[in-house]
Length: 71
Length: 132
Image (cartoon, rainbow over all chains, first blue to last red; front, side, top):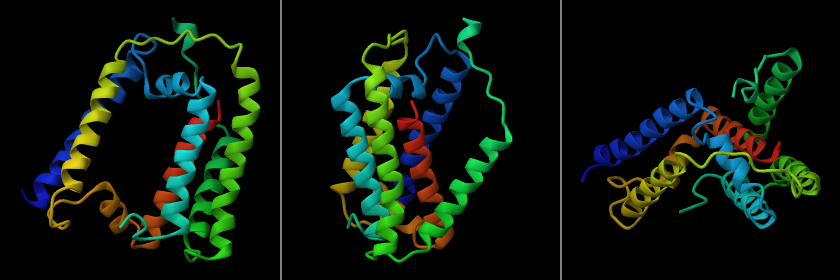
């Protein structure tokens, strides 16, 4: 499997996500949008804290530790 | 149904906030990693989001749900597909032929504009999550 196939896989998932995002936005509120899904998750105190911790960890590792943080 | 759809009008304050966030991203992403200025630049939004989180938790507990679950499984399937593809890439080698999201992020962040875009995206995700 070459890099092109790997990139194509990511691109396909991204494209499907965009299509589904557009579909749910057009059909809201019948279908759960990403925003509605996030709202549901963020209703729970433990999930809120976990999401904040994950977001903080990603930001810290990407920008304070810099390039190559995950390698 | 229609009343649930909020009209979103772009106002000057909104434009000013977006411009400020982009400028902040550009400046903060120009700072060197592993330095105190960069740590402070990243900590400011972290603290702001933490404060917003604590403030929202007080009024969230008695709020109703009212959100549909229809289509939630599609979001789950998309997330599972991404996770599966990432794991396949992660456990394959060489990395050049099997790039992971991390290695893609690293290559994007090799330039100042790419780093600024990633920081702006990170801020936007944080705003989307913690504004409620």
